[in-house]
Image (cartoon, rainbow, N blue to C red; front, side, top):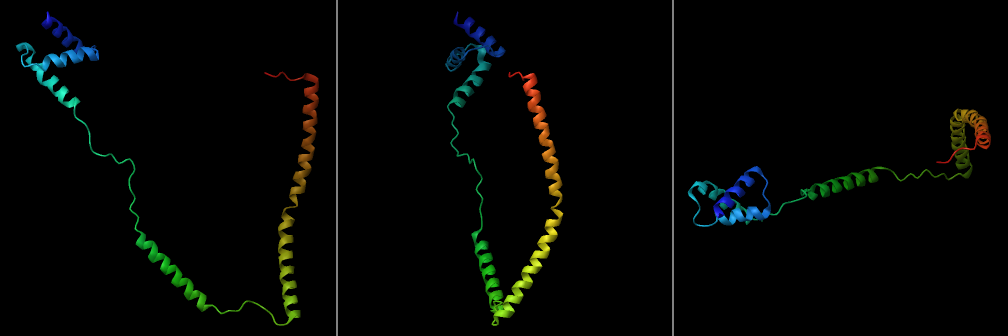
Length: 159
């Protein structure tokens, strides 16, 4: 009777129709010392499953790769930048652009402001087309009035 049950379970197992409880019955049967001779070929397979079930993976899996960044080169670059900065700082003369004569300083400021003014006026001349654009958008405002009138007459349906 037990042999018939094991053979039926093996057939279901080969078809992939067994439950976990039935597979456990097969494992316990094939873990015995004595197994029917025509079923001996299944014993190593179920023995492997039993041993394999108790194995555990113990190595640590790194999820992020570590970036090794060499900070020595950053310090070398920082020192080089500082040395270049100190060299150019000492190479320039300490002329701050000041004038001793107030009239001469005033004339230079007036000259600079005139130059800024002329360049600024050149830039604003090209912006004059924006006035035309504003006129166009005002005429488009009449479309809103038409839309409002249409809404009053036809009363839109809210869904």
